[in-house]
Each structure stands twice: as C-alpha cells, then as structure tokens.
Amino acid sequence: MKNENCIFCKIAAGEIPSATIYEDDDFRVILDIEPASKGHALILPKEHYANLYELPEELASKVLIVAKKVITSMTEIVGCDGYNVLQNNGEVAGQTVFHFHMHLIPRYKDDDVTIGWKPGKLTDVLKEQILSKMK
Ligand code: AMP
Ligand code: ZN
Image (cartoon, rainbow, N blue to C red; front, side):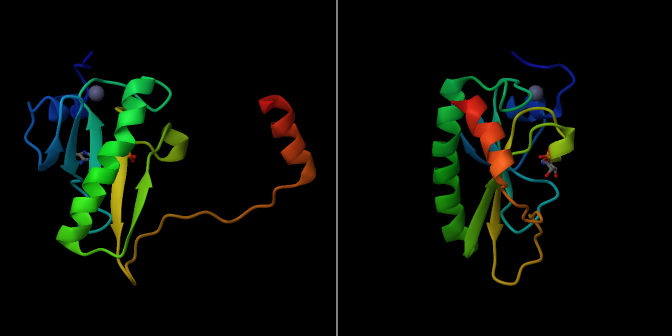
C-alpha cells in the first residue's frame, strides 16, 4: 500500500534519492534532512501507514529491532554518548509527515537538543480514573 502524495512513500520506495544507512524488506532507514544532531536518522516502513495506530503488529515488533541495530552501529560511527528513540503520532504530538517514522537521535554531552516536558503530578484521582478503565 503506497500513498501517491506521500514523500516518505517515495523515499522508502527509492523513487526519491535519500541518504540510506540501512534497508531490508520492510524498512528503509535514512538520515534526517534537518538533523537534531549528527547522525539523526529515521526508520521508514516501505508501506504507507500514517502512524503507530495504523502500523500492523508484525511491523511494530520489527521496528525496535531495526532501531537497536542502527543505533548500535551509528554509536560506533559518530561516537555519541546516548540516544533518544522517539516517534510522534498526530499533529498535536509534533508529527509533520504522516507516514509512520521513528526518530533515532544521537545525544552528545553538552549538545543543544531539546526533548522535554514539564513534569506534572500523578494524583490519586487521575491514577484511579485510568487504572479503573484499563483493567
Ligand atoms: P515528525 O515531525 O516526527 O513528523 O518528523 C518529520 C521529520 O522528517 C523531520 O525531522 C524532518 O526533518 C524529516 N524530513 C522531512 N522531509 C525529509 C526528507 N525529504 N528527507 C529526510 N528527512 C526529512
Ligand atoms: Zn507514505
């Protein structure tokens, strides 16, 4: 399943050139064009799924294996000190390209990458609200 208007479908299919650092039957991993840090990469499934909700379980389970492979070799190449692995779903969550992708962002001591939130408070009411519905 491809989406005619999706740039990541075209990149994943090799129709648009990209800096590919890993490829298998299901995924292409490319360097991000506007990297947060040296080595920032994106895992793209070759089929079009807008987000994690749509991604089939089989691919969802494979994507973290690809992430592990790539961050392990990239760490050796760029000599980073840590990694953020993150994935945005929906505009409100910062997603700008609506073809599932996972960000692999190398972190360096004293870099200026900002990924964060203001810690809130897990109140008893909130905890109960969620736990009672999840059980
Ligand atoms: P998100 O905000 O999670 O949807 O992330 C989209 C990411 O795709 C951003 O980090 C962009 O820099 C990156 N991006 C957009 N277009 C391209 C492209 N043609 N090649 C590589 N990365 C891209
Ligand atoms: Zn797509």
